[in-house]
Image 1 (cartoon, rainbow, N blue to C red):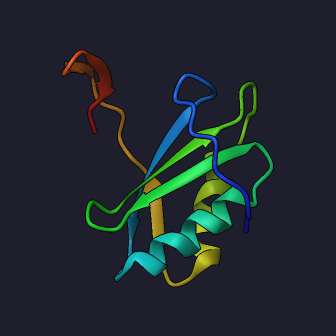
Image 2 (cartoon, helix red, strand yellow; image 1 turned 135 degrees about the vertical axis):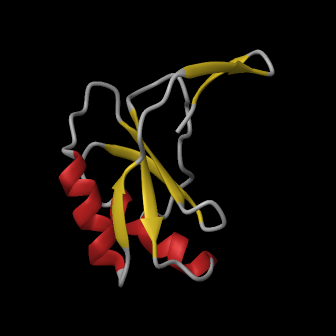
Length: 100
């Protein structure tokens, strides 16, 4: 578990979004984030329990296998995870966002 402020620079590193099932509360999300942030190359993880999505931002130039991210989610507890489908990029409020 990281004990310092997370750097959430959105312009740095690749972003991976996972669909996570089995979460019940914010503690579930924190357990998943902590487990993912222990993986070398992961800059930060942010789980939204309501949407069932976890966004993982990698360090610039880092390559982390998606299977390792899924395994970390499963290691955190009785959760299942899979990569979110990548949809077309849309413009929303002046910023580019990816659907899916």
